[in-house]
Length: 93
Image 1 (cartoon, one colour):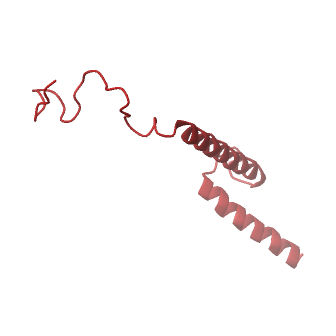
Image 2 (image 1 turned 45 degrees about the vertical axis):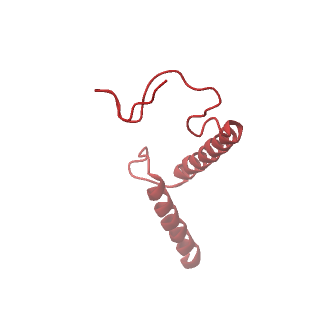
Image 3 (image 1 turned 60 degrees about the horizontal axis):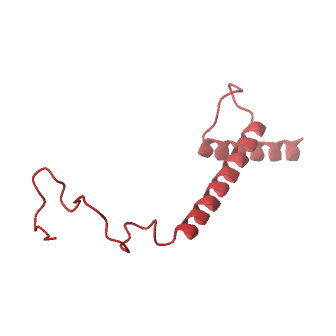
């Protein structure tokens, strides 16, 4: 087949249709699919673990109103502040 130097009218540049050539890969998916899927699964597990820890921490921090869901940064800042407050209560009686 003869390659045309420019796409046909209405056809996006560089995205010609037609059958794919065997042995030619498109994108990263076909390079290392098992490694990528394993890494993605590990990242999902890590993210889930972090989110579970934040959920547990949110239950320990008093908020007003009590059912308000804190963002991650709010949770960290309030936890730090609350720990400091509890430390002062212990020191000062």
